[in-house]
Length: 434
Image 1 (cartoon, one colour):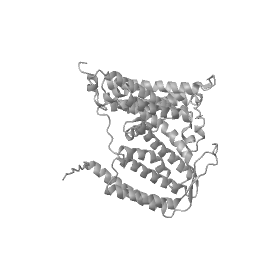
Image 2 (image 1 turned 120 degrees about the vertical axis):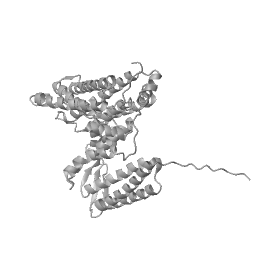
Image 3 (image 1 turned 45 degrees about the horizontal axis):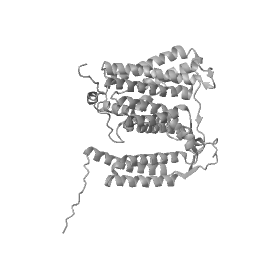
Image 4 (image 1 turned 90 degrees about the vertical axis):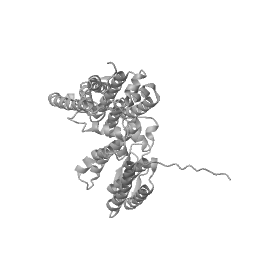
């Protein structure tokens, strides 16, 4: 008689993971109660969501119409089921994906309640989401470049602000210059903003890498310097010379055929150059970090610089290179605020987007795709705040203004799970014998 050995695989769950699983499970149940109570009971009418812009080739594309109360009841049932399943057995590696779906359902139930009896351009809000995510996404990519080689870049806020100021100033000075049909103001504004970001990054690199000054302190100092300098120049130069604070802006560029796709065409394929560059950089950095020698060495320097040095990697040189590239990306992101959007500079117009970019980077676990995905989440929060103000909901405007920052706190607090930075992040490296 043959005995069959059955191997049972056991999965060790740490107390922290078990606690997080329970918190998420109870959160689903709380969300179900809130959806039922706030968005379902007493709600009347249908919510009409526009899925196409009137100027599109498919302008007669039908709207999405949802009965507000029944939809809220359905979402509440789904959330309650997810909460019970999470508490009883959990979802394992699917936990974060299920969490994202649950949050999306909760937000959509909220939008349905806010739009009950009204009409709402969903595609317009999604387009606004992408646009508002641009400076945050580029700032997050800047953080990924720097922290992958173990240099913490708290100065993203200052780089964005300086890029916005220099882009507006130079773009305004060259506003009426055109060569071969090209808008030189936009080109020069972007170019100078990139240089400004690189100069601040050079200051960060020299102080943090060569002189081994605390990286957090250096970043804070650069931010204070940028806020003070741009604020002073705005008062003394721009306020008295309005012609130097009125630059041309980058126009949307439609991609043939793709721009005519309902919903997706307007959101992704009829945008300005900043949006396309953000997504292109995301793909390029993902390939570069995980498929090239530069990426392998960058990640090695971020995890164990001494071992990388032993194998012949020039640690200092690679850190300088990545920090400079990060500064250029952040400067480009700052240029979007003026050259790509409003066409003028206002004092402290970044409004903390550099710090939100750091939260997006943590949300994305130091991966380019994850970082930009996090930026889109924050962009959605900002776009929703604007649209809800237009809809005239009973929610106080102060609470709507808090939305992006509340999302930042939730992400940094670890709702998406523990994120591990590069092992040597923030640690100065001292080369043996030098």
